[in-house]
Image (cartoon, rainbow, N blue to C red; front, side, top):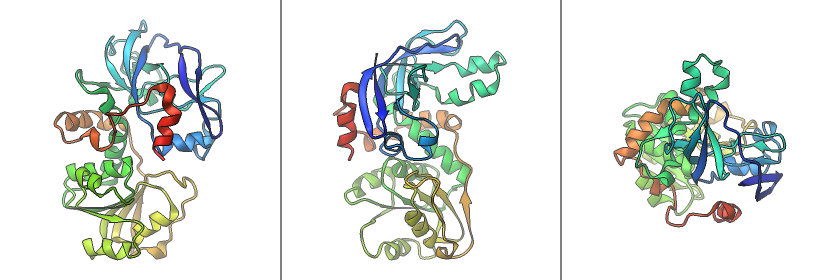
Length: 329
């Protein structure tokens, strides 16, 4: 079968790889749709830490994938032929690794519920809780966004965002837009974004109450015009020292900052002097599985519209994945 493989640092190719073995608790799935992730996938391709500490080339790329179940193992109880499942991936083999392995013609979903029910050690199935069935009739292209939506909603809930709060989102990519959309659903009263030029209309569709181009000289002043006392919550969706410290300077005393982006993962240095007073750094992380049903409901009600995030009218074939990444630059 064909798969998108990081052959060496900086080199992504499409090549033949062995078919995966699904095992007694696994379901063999065909890839229906995958979505490129400009952040995580690029870090993996270019060998940036912390990803380079976890997997080395050659490995199969891709984690925002939707697969359709073709056949199931002997102990599978909660997955059925025809089901659409999130985060389907090709496991690591003898000659090739897996960067989640979602960009392959075929992959595997684990029936973690059956493993749990049978008393299998949790370490064997806990990570597979990302394999969740989406309702019949769901657009599989749009469902690729479920992964990002689940992560970001879980992150905000654990961060403690509440109704009536103010939040500043730094970054206007898929994650920044997701945080803004969820802040809207969670009842945040003021949702200000700082991001790239030309993204204001998209940000407004996601729920931003104000948008500021990061290249403007008076960015901080414009942000404080929206919230003179500072923001209750700041979310750095980029993950850079300069960005995070800008956020600190705009957060009210006692506020809470979350650093979700990965651009400078492991080397971000917060300057306490940048803040307006005391602050808390959120480090609760996220758990995709805990928000799956909520995301399904929000999408079903039309409150999450994948067309804000995805160009669904011009999909790329798996064999064109190099061109797909070039198109996102």
